[in-house]
Length: 163
Ligand code: OFO
Image 1 (cartoon, rainbow, N blue to C red):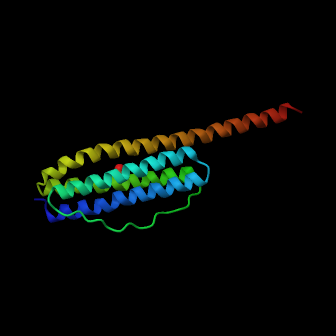
Image 2 (tube, rainbow, N blue to C red):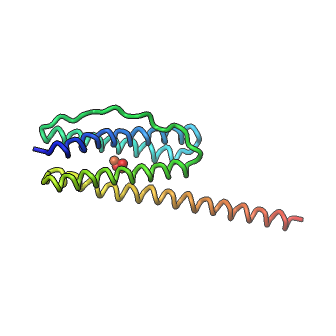
Image 3 (cartoon, protein in one colour):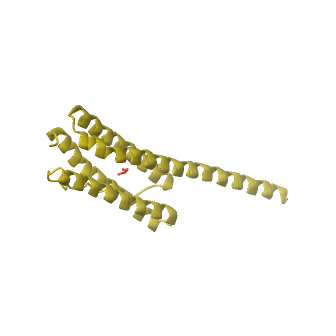
């Protein structure tokens, strides 16, 4: 039997994972209509993964012979300035999820809910991977920015050289 405190956090996590899926879906659709096909593909995939995470929590709660709650999800942000803003927001969100999972883990340990700490190990590893993936994308964006400055600089040089 799981403690009430931990059960509450697990149910909150169902909503958080669902919220993650909606946030990434909104990012995907923004990217899609603004011509960023790669970002759209990345975020559509991510939205699916997050839905899978939500279902994992639901199934786990039900397997504990409790009743998983499907809470409402707030409307995600629909507009972004550019893809850097998209991925910065994604990183911020993933950091929030990592902290939420750590909180459940710590609470479960304090309450001797070992089935829960065992279940959460997969999510702890997953968060490391997800944060790393988003940081890699931010590196790519930063380097791409430098490439365009480099190309612009070359172009400027060519203009003067052409006189
Ligand atoms: Fe659910 O994996 Fe990140 O948020």
